[in-house]
Image 1: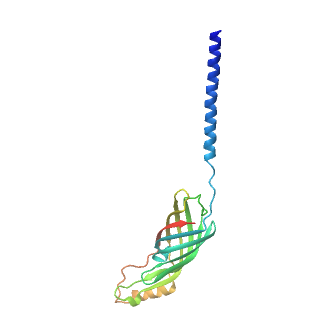
Image 2: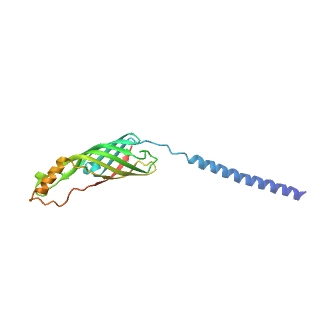
Length: 196
């Protein structure tokens, strides 16, 4: 009889022990599921950055973008452009929405502002900046858990104004001036941004 009682005790103990393990593993699974809550999409409405290139008003400057909807924004920038103040205004489209859920966002844009510059060493009377349209494309890389800051890389194609073309041709035709660097067909911009 003692042996039967011992076997029943071992049997019940084993069932209880394995039941506890199974219960504990179910509790852990539920805890993990509770921790993995879906991320909430947060739309960004303002983007502020500093950098180099036309997107920042010229050589170096600041850019502020207001984003009324998550796929489009209004660009304003101001900066130093060697001979005077440079600026840009324009619109930017986001191929992927400008929210906290995207780490990499391709963009397209169209700007108007200072996009060409003539500097003649030793003849400052020819130094001048020019206004024109500039289409471009770029990529925003966002870092951190909330993806509120990161790097912007852009490639722009400045469109020459007729005033720039006339002044540049006059410099080419002037025998006293030696042109060492023709205007580049593209302009690259790099900046670091914070989103709010």
